[in-house]
Length: 378
Image (cartoon, rainbow, N blue to C red):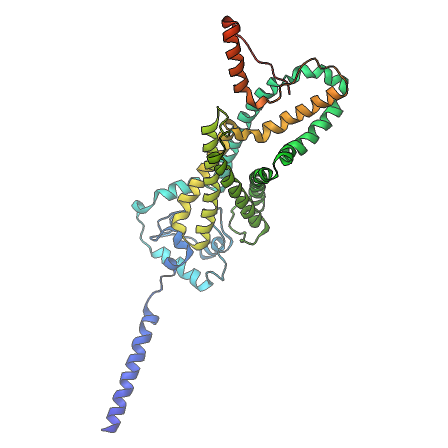
């Protein structure tokens, strides 16, 4: 009886052990569903940020090469993230997934267009358009400065001498914003956070494009990533101060571009924030949200680039040029060369000067109200 009882206990123990091990031996692990692959290629393998993979027929070596080295906007997946064994299992599982064209999301159709090359082309077109518009706006202010009338005097003064003064003013008065430093150092610092942060972001983006077009291989501690993060943070800090000024400064309205300026500031804020959010979502594995946020980021950046010439933010390039012309004119005056005109103290207040001149003419000579032009000199 005792022997039978012992045999029964052993049988129960063995059955329990077998019961615990059988599912692990026979159940198929959903390696694809638990990997980062699913986030970009969809739960059913019918695409998302990346293309459909269901029923994919591709040689094992080519598949592994693509996964390990990346392709286009697809990041490289290291063996520490996905082992060789799991990689082979992923390939087997996606080959068994059913093909259903109805499940291909609109995100993939949009994402397939937003390749690195196409995005670069879009921004190139937006940049060229913004540059042409900026040149047009700048030419308007240069004409108001009547630089052409100064040309004969510059021949006497010396072209190289004038060019040196102009470049020096561009650096000191334009890039370094020396006048604001002398007036209000705190505002200069806030202005610098936006200006230099924005320039730093542009530089980081260009260097990333050269160093790693797919933007996938750079870790967060890479110098270019650190530069982008620091510059983005500085721009956001400066923007918060600008928004505060919009709320508290009663002289912020220049009478012409207030609405467009406020739109530009908000576009800049949204573009920086969506850029940070795209990186954060991608790094955290929330791949479902990466594509819509990334598209929104691209749209806001394009709108930002194209709208800039129509806002007061165009003073980024207008003020340095006008300050340079003013510096040359001051040098000409000090050199005792007769320039034959007087200087208008603030070319940026054209709309106010026009309003004053119109009001005066309406009382003095109403018939000439529509037929006059203000001549500006730096």
